[in-house]
Length: 74
Image 1 (cartoon, rainbow, N blue to C red):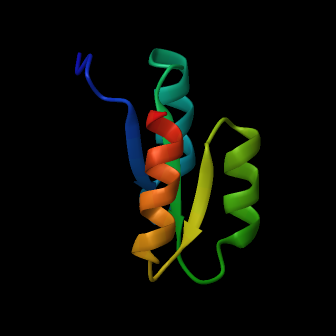
Image 2: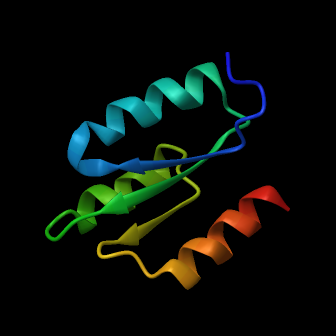
C-alpha cells in the first residue's frame, strides 16, 4: 500500500503516537515528522524514541519543515 510514500507528517494531537507505532511496524522505511501543539513537548520527545525522524512545534516554520523533508528524502 502506497509504495512511493517516503515521508509522513503526523500530528500528535490526533492519536499520533499510536499511528506512529503502527506506521513503523508496517513500513519502517518511512520517515515520520511529528507536529506538536502547545503542551505536547514531552510527547514529542517520546515520539522520537518511538521512531519519529523529528518533531516540529506549531505553528510550523515552513523553512524548517522543508529542510527536514529534504533530509528524509536524501
